[in-house]
Length: 318
Image 1 (cartoon, rainbow, N blue to C red):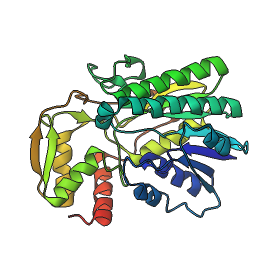
Image 2 (image 1 turned 90 degrees about the horizontal axis):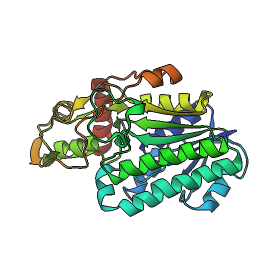
Image 3 (image 1 turned 90 degrees about the vertical axis):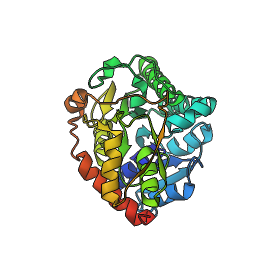
């Protein structure tokens, strides 16, 4: 039996694949190595599992029915963890149609394939961006108002809606996991933590949008992976669950802590706030605790230190 991980060469996907293989699970990875960032980095992400008898790689697009035939044709997949997507809030503003095609149409194709192959469980990788703005306190799953601020957030909200449709019509077991600001080693180069680290290390101006008081609920990659695995293994029929840390960190504090960890002083390039950025994200994780036994283990300062060590090892620290 096997777990199919779409987008398995990406940041979250590769950590999940590595953990599953290490635990003796057979894994099928479906990834198209999209050039949104250097595909060589994604291949490096899989270096620990390439060659393992527990690992099989399929290169293809989730919108292509032939890929699903290849991935599910053996009849051995017991769960699909659907992480493949065009990622990133800011790029989605300029590429809304493309984000809709990959993230919505690709998700529907996945759901159709899962129903046809009678896959017992689907985990859909969603995002805190479905919440938009205007919420007070920690975001609970029932607070989402379907008013995202970006095409990326809208595509994830639409994906959740289609997951519910396929559960309702076909009895497909689905868990939608809303990830909150995931970080750690191998984080995507387009995400704030990686961007900040590059500018700090190189001594180049670091773009800070807004006054730095915006807060994000940074969640360490190992905690996210543990939550995904629990969602995959527990007998849930349809649920929407936050995976976060419930401890928001101001962006300016992130910059200061990262600069200290890298041993450099940041050069701040103040920019106007962007309308696609929410002022705050914070996950209410009561449901995750109740249904998954989830508890974030890695505090931000510890996780940031792990990231900084990885960054200096891989990128030379300047």
